[in-house]
Length: 432
Image (cartoon, rainbow, N blue to C red):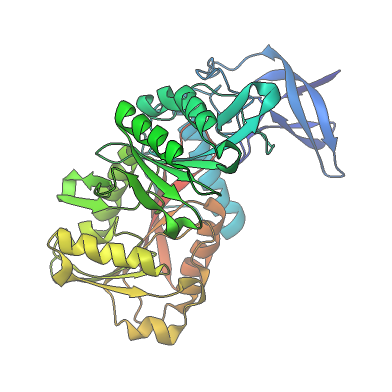
């Protein structure tokens, strides 16, 4: 019988224990619990396991709301109270700074927390025809599997989208290309939800009639995507405007294609933008860089504060839409956009964009190591770094502090993805 007392959670949300001097990662266990577990895998330096019985439960354990918890791979921490989830993620961030960079933030910022349910405004739903399951399945993949979970609802999707899952299963089953439609992408802005159907074969006229009827009946806009993301086009209504999300604090709205990258959690994003702008403290006439600027999520608010902003992004289509957003919001005169691969940026390229008083960095999971290495003696006095990967943030922070002369003034997490182990964070660096 395998018994363990759980000490902490790892970055995947698994309980961490030591049994007979060996680390054990146990799925479904929470800190402070005494559990009986089944060993799944044994390695020379660690074991993995799965909870079989909770002998002494944590006071922070809650009943998962979703009936698909444990099967669907979308959420792994629904059994932990949402406030405690944020505390765990804060510890993950602190541990990353210390173990990777030997750094401690001078101030830990309070966590940014939003609604725990119905928050997910973007999602990629898998579609499979499975005869022994009775037909079409629409949902997320099962945990550690390519199979699609048999779902009829999803508690983290907006309620209208969750309620549509059974209807989507029926819809796909009525199409002649039911087995040639592998994915439905969901994008919810301030208007009607958009569903992007990935189609591998052309639709028939009967298919088109079915889709139009579905869109009208459920109040959604349908797009079709025959190839890569840039091939997605509106289907019904054919002339529908792009979806939009708004940052009311800065009186800006950002239009986006439903296949564009936008933040999944609009409520947390609004607070995150407000915090980033507060930490950066832009002033009129300052020159500020927004690196990995995307559609302008931070660029437009910075410009609204009166700063002159240079936005740099590797995707030409995203930059094109960022320019359109700047123009639509009356901010084009204050923003200069560039298309550049920041993963391969050189000191000469960076200096070619001029000197900056301040800088915002918001990279993908890979981080911004080449960018921070390029910073020279004329580097910005203040940098705000928004990260979706504590490990690469800590790695880059080590360069900023130990090599470039910055101080890690403050850091904290934003619970962008409640019930998952994903850690979004923000950090403030200052020179001198």
